[in-house]
Length: 246
Length: 271
Image (cartoon, rainbow over all chains, first blue to last red; front, side):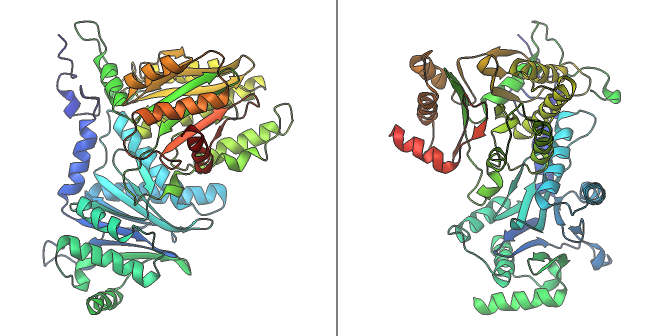
């Protein structure tokens, strides 16, 4: 009678369990949730917006240095949910890859190409024992020249899809349920509606009203394709618009 | 292949002589979405379920792009074939729409059951091998050769240090000088030629259904209908052109993935 689950190593490195699962990959997903942050991304008709919580655990910390939003190139943004150190590694490698792409091929790396590259790298970590999967879910956003606004989500298992709206982190499932209802009829959201849908989704799922300093918002717009992190004043405007609307 | 820190294989024999990691990989395949293939007298069809995890997933990111190429492609004998083939290879690897059925060469397609990310790796390696063969011999790679080389890669990962086997089974459909062919490749690296086969969740029902319905002189259209009926057997929910993918290759030796409109037409015929 074979006991062969790899002698219990299937929980320590990415080899198959008897049920055909990869425990290390599943634990990586749990690590994303353990960061206790929820993030939301919404794609509108001509813009993409991502929102995440900004938890500053210590008052002595410099608030401006706490961020989950990273520009990869001028036109591509990445929102990393999960382990912050793994996020930094991913961002460094993505920035390098995007720069090399631009040098090698003479045009800016498109969103889906970057998403696929991140996903392929994550797949390598799920198959080779020497590196563990990264505990990060990455949402990549940008405006594609041919296909318009794009939002892709890449996870530790190596899957990636384009999304109309999505979520990651602690309250991922609740947020996706909320967004499914909102996006059911394929609404063509304007820029303001996109941002407000994203922020109000986060508020409703976490059941608290935010101050502008407690969330981070990143956007790309068709008329201004540079990836931008909104300032506190701009976030305030959107929050006021939401509360007036309700 | 393999990593220096792990200079020992992770796939080792159990006391009863089994390679349990490969068996676990087969279990992973068995919990993947159903796919199947049927070899007809004048072509091959492969099909799979395509259940997206949420309605929020953008279907156009899961769209077929093969139609972009074939209205421009030249016959094999044309000098320009080589340019087109290289462009195809480069383009396909960078403009991947998240599609389950993939083209390896203009006359060979592949579908999988199991882990999507592992499949992407195999597709990339296979495409490169096909292109290297073409560079060396100046002719398109025969289906058996490509299957053999892909299977060799999969076997490597069951024996090299520090890696696990691939969690996918592949169905490779091709049409070359030897006629239409259908091969199934397993995580162990073993492969067989099939007249009709299925893999994934509903494999036993699907195979029984195929055994009853298969005839040696089937035409390609009949094969597509049979494929749809087989998928319908175990399908949860309403089957439509949006939640299945079908790829066909006929005597014209051009593999293509059907659009969802074409699938809907076939579905209407089947009703």
